[in-house]
Image (cartoon, rainbow, N blue to C red; front, side):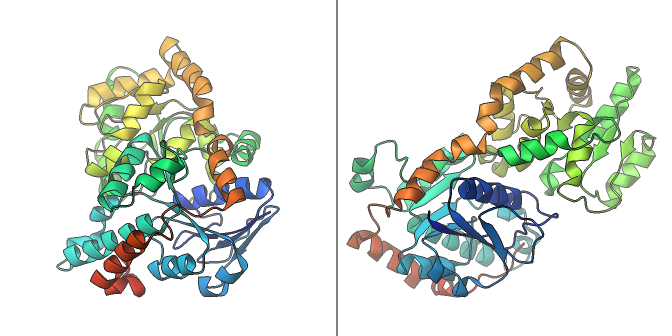
Length: 405
């Protein structure tokens, strides 16, 4: 049994969790099921319970001494990283390159470049101090390997430890664990709906392209219904009304609880996570891709990057350009209407189930935690000097990060 501290940063692990919060909670469950004692340091109290897991709002300064392993999100408090590394904890880091951050409103202001430079420096420090890095997609794995080279992290010592670099980096795709699968399967189905929008909060994931597609499908004699799980802005509501789609579009009354999602998605025919072309899309798998496997829903997605690539490769749904209402309408019909196309996507989802299995993908991490062997370059003088140079060049790393989210 190993004591593991998961520092959730700004992400809650209560019924309003989402995105990274889900990933942290489900990872904690897998670690606890394997016999480890897990503490989650969260920003607020939680009603979630699981054997072997405790959730606390105590500051990390009070928690480090009682733990052997630290798991962080991408971009944690760099003071935590420096302190934990000096104390000899085994550091495991979620490590998404800071690309999406360029979409943040804070970076659009006059201090945007300085804030982004600070963000990148904090990410580089995490990349240099982590004993092991978790990535979420094949594309992110490749980009992280390149970043490890650029930071000088890769070396002959790492290659000798294993040329596949599995000791340093492991792929844990977007997915779900068996507990979530059981909860989803036992939840009652909500009111039936053709399409659920579960895409994301950023502008490049906005659901507005679905409305012209619904209008085109209506012109073909098929009224597709759409349910949004995220609160849209007033412009989207106005567009629904202007196109006369009010009877076909179901909008949320307020924030949807985590467990409420099961009912909303169990009554659906397909999932839509379309977005626009951005650099962020090239390396990430959108977190709601998990819903396709968890609820056995064909997923309609855009071709703009890694999410579209994996959907096409697995055959779990149609890929269509959201800028083309006709193509998107036909994709939605193929995913929702009974027939060979939908049957093929459902069969592909069944075959792809192991790819979404968190228990399976976390096995390498479980072995590393059991061994808790530090990275082979942790005590290398050249590596220590490189870390010292980064901190000297960016003294702000020893202070709290500015709020940009």
